[in-house]
Amino acid sequence: MRLIILSIVSSFILAANAHASLIGDTIEINWQNPSIGQFFSTDSVVVGAGAEVTCPDGGINLCDGFGQSAVSFDISASSISIEFIDVFFSEFGQDSYNGFIFDDLDWVGMIGEIVDVELVTNVQGLDLADVGFGSNFVSVDFGSNSGTVGSFTNGSFVTLNLITRHIVPEPSMLGLMGLSLIGMAALIRRKRS
View 1 (cartoon, rainbow, N blue to C red):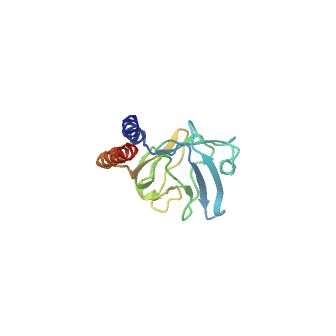
View 2 (cartoon, one colour):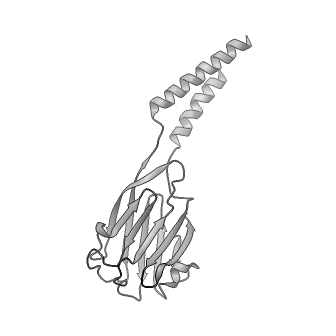
View 3 (tube, helix red, strand yellow):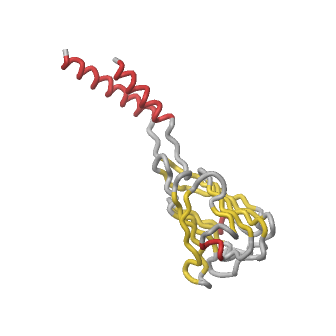
């Protein structure tokens, strides 16, 4: 009887704790700029608490492109934020694509995919036409291929809120699993006696 109760309780506890997050995932940040080369920089970072990269002293290739400008990249459980804290440039180059691609966004905790992106920004001229996404990547283009992106000033920011879809066990499935465990325990008990 203890086995049955333990099995049912543990199945509900495991289902209740199921959540998807980018925290703990290793992702790639690519800066693509055709004027300099296919990718100006490609860096891998582990998503954790606080900003994953703070330039100019971030210690990764991405920071080399900003010179002495202070820029931070903060990836949270379901969003990506770029903050231009102290910038020494007014705009990104007017290339066919000049921006960032956040790739290999695998959800820790359960299988999922990106189905939409919400853009929150104070950069004039930057809109959803400058944002692209797929099941495990999101990109933002500052190269003005869809219009004129305004100049960057201290305090400019871009936040990409990721709308995702995840495979979650349904409550009815948990009930069926509990009933099957009860049946198996009863069968084992009957064979023993």
